[in-house]
Image (tube, rainbow, N blue to C red; front, side):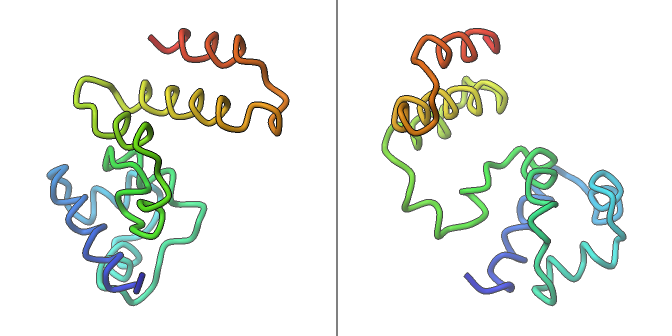
Length: 121
């Protein structure tokens, strides 16, 4: 993805939340000029800002980064697209789903995943 495409997506996400560049920049701890550079495609945000942007705009990173979208399974897409779930619930379900898919590589049991998901209900 080019920086300009990413910039358009960042601007659209900000505008959907009704935030100005100044307000959004203040929320994540950057200057308004940095936010402007990201949205114009002059620069891309560093990886340390992705989680902040995702939470601020209430948008999952896969919705900003199209290369990742193709990697989502139908179950992950269904969780992300469910309008009745909060972002916290979606993240917990996606984490639990990831544990089931990679149960042995993470060294976590299914009961641990269920316990974590039930804590966020």
